[in-house]
Image 1 (cartoon, rainbow, N blue to C red):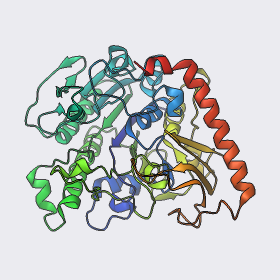
Image 2: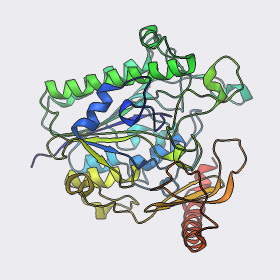
Image 3: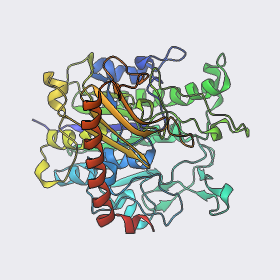
Image 4: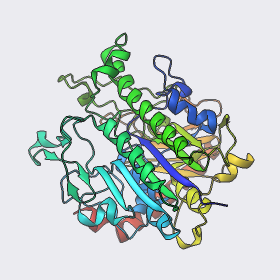
Length: 444
């Protein structure tokens, strides 16, 4: 069988409810929805972290973020370290089995030389390396308010700084992705393309043509819809290009958000100190930074027409770290060559097999969480960054209470005790591994 092509499409700070196929009623995303129509829509898909750098590290390495060397949001100055070749990425692994590799869009896994995309498995890179940029000037401003770092221009083609002043970055990502698919299609090698949109992460920027589509909505929701509509148009162009060059049926496309929606007041862009309400986690509790479901349960879609039956809705819990082993095994690679925490989920989407995970774990600063089938335990859970702890111990049955409204910790003491022990044991092992392998590098 011919090796498949792989495309990962990642959005930034997109809530669980911010797709029409996931329940949005005030705007539609027909092109993204078509991925679910032709393949799988996961209702229990999880990011590796409720914030972006660790989430991206987990997706690309198949590991829990702490085991990949990235546990927090990385800084955006040009000496900031992050991921290193010591931990192979999916791009590195796929290159070994004959793939061309490319990333377009946001990196946010380090700007120091050893942490850049070209040093971590990607043949080609077009995009930015910090956490966020102005969508039109491509300048990284975040952090300038504290006086520690000056604004920095951040647009690159491989290791060369370039300028595309005035061009809307979402459109640039789509344009470069289509060009890359066209170029890859001219040779016989399979390809892996990581399309890493920064929308709808702040600053909340969208061209007038997109804003006009949603002029009937309040500004915060209007700009969210506009930014995601631009992404949706881009997904349509990417799929159309695959169809034009005959690669569509043998290309596995995976789509997810890196974490839940942002409540950060900087989204308003007018000095408003109130929490931002433009993104939604639907019925879920919590937002970006939180280990309640709204921070880590995200849209997850997978389309591979030649292999994966369409129109599937899968409730089995799976996670971003599963993409590395799933793609690599499908490409003919040897999983035994890699240290990974994820699992191959191709049997889940092709044979109706249950999730391979008995437990999935998360951590974020003082928060720790674990899911065991239907039960989910959160220790020291926050709803959003900067707010106090909600409950020191919170147990929920997600099969009957996906909104995590009812704390069953006292009602089910044995399950609470067992999951607490599991979570703390996992966290202790992760902390030990972190201190031995990563902490010194991280502090610099």
